[in-house]
Length: 461
Image (cartoon, rainbow, N blue to C red; front, side, top):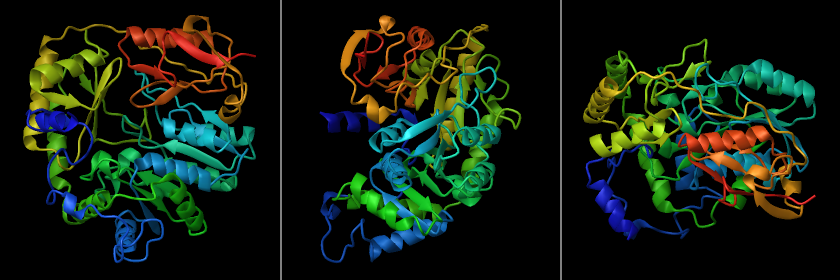
C-alpha cells in the first residue's frame, strides 16, 4: 500500500536532499483529517477571497514584495497555465526560453499560441543551460515584433539565474510582458545571499513553488504580480485551471510556511551551506558546481549540482551509490551530474553526511576525461504550432525512421521536463542521435506516448 511505503521511507533513515523543502520535519502540528474542510460559511473561498484567505494572500504579498499574491494549490504548473492564458490571446506570438518546464509548452498548446524559441547556451564544459542573454531576447523581439509575452525560467533546475531587470526592460520597451517561472526561487526574498527575486526586478508575473525550497506541503505555490490591470484576469483564469474545491489542508500548510519564514533567520542554514561548500571544494574527481559571472548572470548557492565530468562515474551511478551506501536520496541525476536540493530545514547531520560521502566517493573514483552527453543545440524546424499539430492525421513509426516527419509528441528528459522535440516540429537526424546517445548514457527519456526510444507518433502527411 502507498501509505505503508511512505511510512517505511519516513522511518528508513534516508536523508532527503530533494523536495519538498520541509525535509519531512514538522514545523507545525500535523494537519489531521478533522480540519480537512470545504468552502463552508466563515472559511472564505480561494477563487473569490474576502476573509481569512484574503488575509493570507496579503501576508504572502508582503513577504514576497508583491502588490498581489494568489495562493496556488496545484503547484507552479497551475500558475503558469493560468498566467499564460491571462496574458495572451489565441494566435499571439510568445517568446519562450527553450529550457522552460513542460507546463509552459502545455499552455502554448492549449491557448493556440505561436512560440518563438530562445535557446540558452550551455555553461561551458557542461550540459547545463546558462542564463538567458538580453541580446538574444532583443534579437527575438526584432525577429518577432508582434510578440506579446516572454517566458523564462530563473532560477533553472540547476540554480542558474538570468538578468531579470534587463530582460524586463527589453520586454516593456517592445510592448510585451515578462513571466518568470521562479519555481525554484521561493527562498530568494529571505536573505541577500540569494539572487534578487524576479518580482523585485521588474517581472510582470512570477510564480514560485513554496514546496520546493521552503517548508510547505507538496503542490503549494504562489503567483505574484505588481500589475493591478492584470489581476482580475489572473483570478478568472486561476478559477479555470485550479480545483473548485481547493484543499484547506494545503492552504493551512502555506500559512504555517509563511509564519515560519517570517520569524526564522536563514543565517544558520547559510552557515551550514557555506561550510559544506568549503569542505567539498578540494574534491579532485567530483565537483560541486559554482557558476561565476563569466558563466551565468547569477547562481543559487542552495542548489548543489555535483558533477562527474572528470571521473569514471555517471550521474546515475553517483546517485545510486549515495542512495545504497550512504542512505542519501538526491533530487535528480543527469548523464554527468546529480542535483542535491537544500533548504532552510536541512540539518548539520545531513550536510555532514553528504560531505563525508562525496569525499569518500571522490577518493575512490578514477580520473577520466569524458565526452559531454548529446543535446539538441538548435531549435528544430517547425511545420506548425503545437495546437494545429493536434489536427494532423497521425501514424506511428519506428523512432530511428522518424527523420523528416512531423512529430506529434513531446520528447524530453524527466526530470526536469525540458523538451528536445515539440509537437509540430520536424524530426531531425540530430534529434534521433541525441535521444539514442542520452539513453546510452543512462539519461531517463520519455515522450507523450511513452514509447521512446522505440516508436514515435508522427503526422501522416
